[in-house]
Image (cartoon, rainbow, N blue to C red; front, side, top):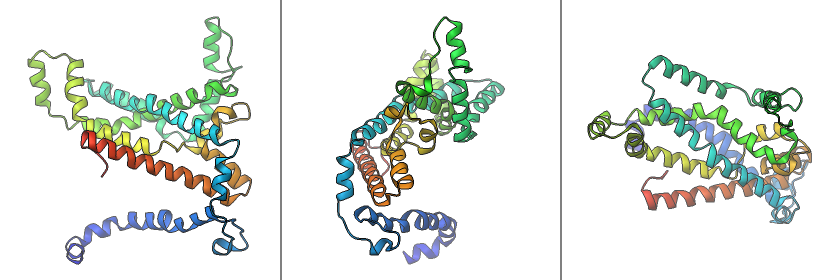
Length: 298
């Protein structure tokens, strides 16, 4: 260890800000997780608060909202896994086949642009486009003889709106990783396949996709690890009392109970449960993929 530090000291100095960041903002605060097992009282502090064991966890498991939260959280993530995960890959494969450089740059610019919109602006656009009275979508529906739909107040539409708006915002940015992987594909493979009479679709299926399969698997594992996590801001901004049945997820429940309800210990217990499940999923999926494909995070 000493020899390594002496030999590569410049590399350790280079990475030290990242290490310090994670220590200060991710590892040191973990001592506060103990309030999940205590009845936290601010005047007594973390150490002085009385110990209650797993009472908060039992309260959450037996609560009326438990199964609704689990169903909505997993439902949205599975929906995203089926729709939003393949979208950047398909887009990258399509962009990779564009040979006209100017047109390719135009496509990349147009698809990357939504990523830089803030969540507040994105939700504002969604509300504007899907407005029952003035929305473009409802105007198009009425143009074809249909009745206007109140998208944002009908619970059945929430997951679809959330996922497809996420595809619009993130597909272009997510395709960057796949485009970088596709840049490393040996062009001689395509030349040989072309000589053998392979079509463009056959070359994509038998050369491009197998070549970037390790990248796809790593990103899939990371997505599975966040199966219990749904972004708070977008859900909260799109949420209202009429679509709560399908929009209420663990992150919004933690906010309501912890911040608004000042139930800090209870919300910490819910958050810890969420993190433990995510960790178990990540380790499990990583182990399964490593045995099947020999490609994994570790």
